[in-house]
Length: 307
Length: 284
Image 1 (cartoon, one colour):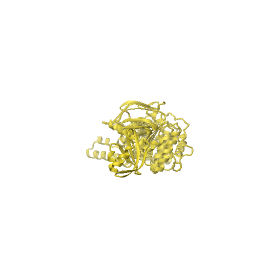
Image 2 (cartoon, chains in turn brown, orange):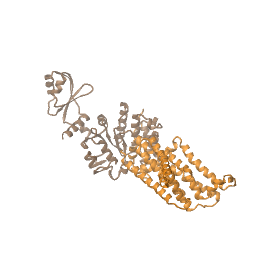
Image 3 (cartoon, chains in turn red, purple):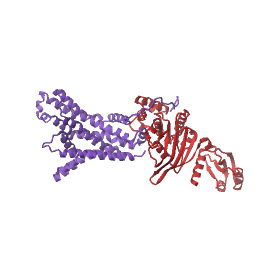
Image 4 (tube, one colour):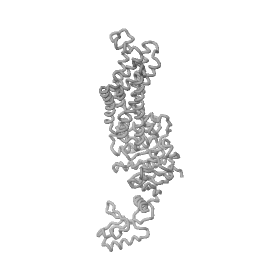
């Protein structure tokens, strides 16, 4: 496997708080989703890889460059879309993208030409001569993506790329990410709270909790875990009693009123009918459900917290 | 809004390794300052002031200048000409303060306000490169509007007199004086700019710093009649340093000028140290 990123025993502390706790990670080519609850250390890990923060111990390589001593070389090959709203005021879209291209080492004329191309690509061709501070939240996200792409990096870090976007804009942003990934010339790491975004775009998933990588697997295997039997139910009657009887299992309700019951693999799903009968509940719909990324995520975090 | 028709495609070029990584910051910053409202007005202060001296140099070599005999006599010698050019009633210093406010106050505070640091530092730039780029913008404007016209004055004088008569000391003074003052003012404005995201506040502080240093020095001098208090004043330090580098002080006692030069240099170093600490602590 060609290694894009290799981290060995990375530790980072904010004062007394251990933000990154002996992280070991090796990733190859592909599109990776980095998941974790708030404060898990996702952004800190990204900052360490980008060279913004220096780890207290451990070492690592990004695209064959040492993360401690070769920040400048690393950043030449990396594109970064930060989560925070950060643009340089007083510049229009083309000027900003070209400026950042020049700072990455592109010749001026090439940077201007490429700036037009990436702005066209992200769908800002009509607004490219507008001052960036007048852009809407969605346009700013696109602008940040254009800025991250302008120098054609080998590795792209996207920190909450769909943050602040309406559903249509979000869909378009994900389509862009999928399109970039489909060329297979660029590797992508996406940090997002929106699990559906990661599920729809990534082919690998990394889950962090309390500063550690607790799960690293291919998306297909994360979605084909046989640790639970998930049953979808539509119920009527004494639902509270039914839920109380099954309180040992995880039960969640979606916005359509469908309950998803997570049963252990050795628990016969037919016994749900018996429980329903005992608690005076009618089962109007019964279906074995697929494992979603959210299920895999919750399971991994639950197991991590239990240890 | 339509998205891509061709899909993503790679850039075929190659990133170049530049030794002056901050050059795009410098060049873009110069354009940015020049595009600001009132930039021409601020530049015109300097140019009008320089033009007056050019005119006096012209009159000094022309019979028509007799009616301004007294003024011309004062600048007959090179050292007096350049001493007055740089320090006369602190006009040039005042314009330099205005320019450092105009060009420098927003440079870092704007980036703090709009969190642009992340954009800069996600590029192959160090924090030092960033500071160099920003600092060079203010320094460029200050030097090109003080040292530039001074060099023109020398050339103009050479053309009128037909010989290169400027002594080495005066020539060095012409270069050293604006460099020290520009370094001082550029470091002050950039340092203050790094301390607050409010550019308006930074502008006020720079101006108040200049005005109050002069006012407080004058006040203490008037009360205690001791010239030592004049070291507090930026104008007075610049004036004394001017006397030192051009050798214009009557009696030839230059210790005060040397001390003033050291004070300005020392303050510049302190401003740089504060700037370095501040930039190092900015989170990205």
